[in-house]
Image 1: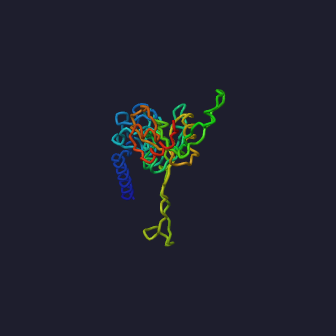
Image 2: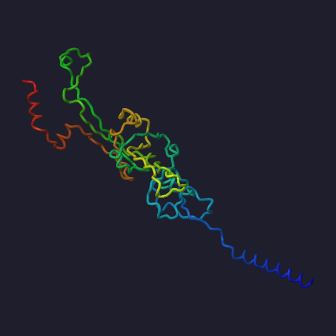
Image 3: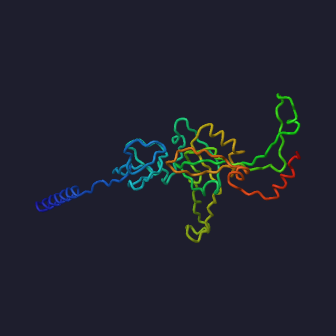
Length: 294
């Protein structure tokens, strides 16, 4: 009995000793590296390595799509306001796995979210992304008008002038940059997702033997930009409806360029007078024949 008791006590002592040794060599909790803002970052501010820093946090504290190194930021504009000490995630600078679509949070006081639709050509091959600055150019067809003969002959100064379309000068193109330096909030193509894989042959597994549905081809996208109610009125007037594609063209500008360029706009007569566009001789001949005889 004494021998058995000693053996039990020895076993218990060994277990306690092993547990203490395991506690001494237990690894520390693994932490993950994230980026945090060293200062307040306003909407549209470039996020550069000097205004962020790396910080080790517990895994459960990681937010969104984490950025692990200051080398991952190189001036991308902040899509949201980021307070000092907050984590800088991919979603906040437009590089995350999940697109941030809280449009209201991206607006400055007084700004409104305005939309227009572009195709691959008018949308810069769909390279426009949230945070970009763009100009918007309008192209429209107009009919040239002239004052009617009876209106010209009317001696009443109070009579309103009357106009008529000039034969052969309908559907004349005119082009003008109507809005400049507008911040892009959202582009619908960034939400495009691949179709879900399917077991088309019914063998219970999804592999190369299954014919998968083709991914839909994106032929137009919606661009949402920050502007004013006046900008919204301009866009609405420029388009017959918001589904119209082709009349508005997005032009990407440098992120640091906030200057407003004074443009002339372009019509056929300006192409002739300012840029030397050649007019066929038959047109000049017809104009001479149509000119009134003195």
